[in-house]
Length: 180
View 1 (spheres, rainbow, N blue to C red):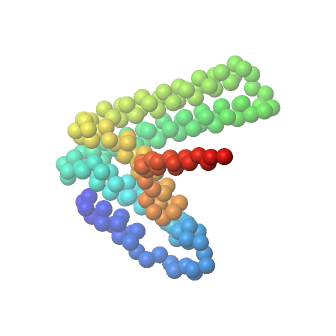
View 2 (view 1 turned 90 degrees about the vertical axis):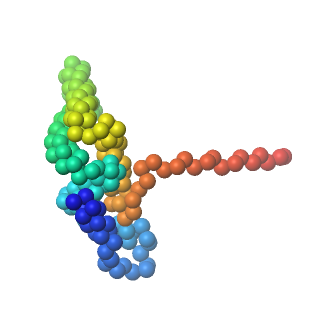
View 3 (view 1 turned 60 degrees about the vertical axis):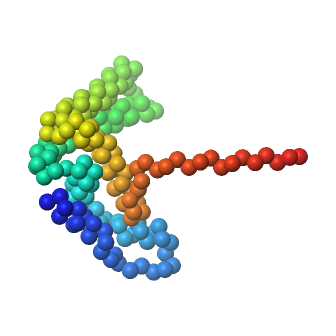
């Protein structure tokens, strides 16, 4: 199943997109080619293939992991949604002329940080659930891979290629002093 998903994901990128004129800059062509091409289903399939490959999941591990991951992903999404809601409320309250009292703003700040704390509790609980169905080293990789997948997806959406989530640092240019 994992191999089939990886092949499907690879083939979807290998297909010839619409031809564009040479007059358009390359970056603009790439944006045009990939604009609107990332449905929820395609993103889901790309994520499954990415995780399966990076975690080197066996068929037994994958069978146990994916139902747990889907449930955890839903919990994490709900917690993030609450954080964003609290952040919007706080942002509105601190705008000029909002008319909110210091007491009201303090309560909104407390709500915001409580939501962040809840997100962290959910993430920690999710790790505990992953480690029940995966070896600890693989369970620990899940959060890292979520970030890497997000960066990769953004790179694909922006430029049509895979963004490197951990680029190598470039050396500083050598400084040459001029003698006067």
